[in-house]
Length: 78
Image (cartoon, rainbow, N blue to C red; front, side):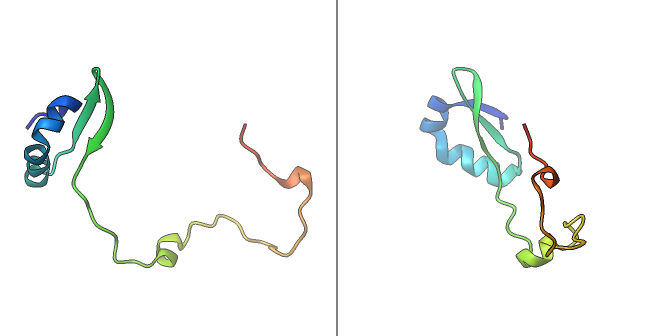
């Protein structure tokens, strides 16, 4: 199966393309005027872990959460 297909071709062959993705497990990029716009890929499912288990260990620092914060303590992305 091709890894790239135009929107118009996808429209005409959507079920065939989706079946191919299911069978091969490879993603297909949908293009519009030659530019990638969408990806059709197999669904991997949700992990068997709860949301709290997924977040476990993701907090870098939690020293004194009750301490007040000043304006200079915030980091803002520009």
